[in-house]
Image (cartoon, rainbow, N blue to C red; front, side, top):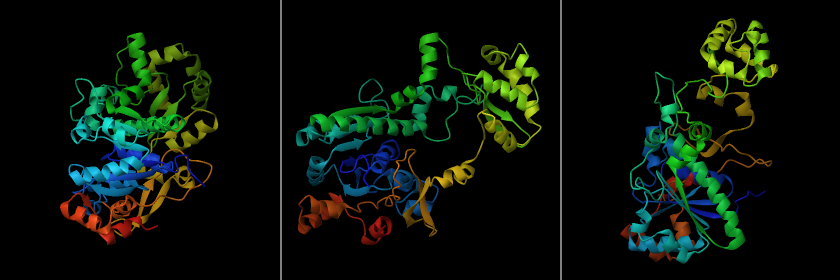
Amino acid sequence: MSLPLSGLRVLDLSNVLAGPFCGYHLARLGAEVIKIENPKGGDLARRLGADPKMSDRLQGLSFVAVNAGKQSIAIDLKSKDGKQIFLRLVATADVLLENFRPKVMERLGLSFATLAKHNPRLVYCAISGFGQTGPWAGRPAYDQIVQGLSGAMSVTGDTRSAPLRTGFPISDTIAGLTAAFAIASALIEQRQTGRGRFIDVSLLESTIAAMGWVVSNHLNADVTPQPMGNENFTAAPSGTFRTATGPLNIAANEQKQYQTLCDLIGRPDLKSDPRFAERQTRKTHRGALTDELNRALAAKPAEEWEAQFNAAGVPAGCVLTVPEILTEAQVVGRHFIETLPATRSDGKALRVARPGFRFEEDFPPPPAPPALGADTVHWMTQLGYSEREIDQFVANGAIGVAPIAAAVSTRSA
């Protein structure tokens, strides 16, 4: 069994989330993904997450989430020896991924133009907050900053709570997926032409692009998007409603679904009420319709309504917590959560979520996230360096090597 990107080598210089999330998807598609990390601490995410003891081991749970299946080489790219080692690696790679601020790699003497001379086939992907050009290019950017600047926060929440940040770093995540898609596309061209390509991925633009319907309504109908909470601006009734036991999402977006809903809740009169009879009038009188539905839905628990509506073709779903959805048969039965060959600080198995795609074949879980510098010696040897040279590079700080025990505990399968 082989995966689509088997045989491809990716050098992942990125940190924290957007770049590592991209690299994680490439790794799960079969690519050999090698993290190039600073010997002094490595990826910042190694120290992030809810388990302080794991962070002390440089295996923070934030790092674990998006770095399984990768390797780690610790190289100081600011040192002369480190640069030369890195250039040897570049000559063997298909892809380079980084998420530094623009011009950082250029200042290191490792710009795309320079690297392309060593490897004309190199697909180079740079992820940044605002892109490589423009008046904001040099600004520092984190997910929350981009969420605010992109307009996403302005339409999240309702009139009382907006602007509101999403409950996870959505701009970093979307940018990572955007980068993975662009890289995979460029690799097809690389195979056909033998040429590499520079890819410029912006968190800001990736986020705005993902807001396509909202943006289009403004560009083409002069509509200023407004925060609508749990309501869907495209249809009604479509949103979150109250039941006897808790919230329930209902999306009766089509006329037939709406009419079926009215019958199921014992309110067939709502089908002919002039305020709610047509799609557009329902949107105009959204608030009144929601009140009517909430009163009727109070008669049963959310779970009963969910089953009844879905059986009749009306899309509905309870509002679950993260712990609840991860124990549902739908998720458990498809083996979405994978157990890695490593343990948490309490000795229990380390687990991760797989990507949102799968192939017909069932592949085993990936190796555990690497210890910092776990693969340095292996790759130095592969690149032709002698044991004496390796020892010298370690001594002068050009490279870092993981302690043997740490490397074995996280890399063993």
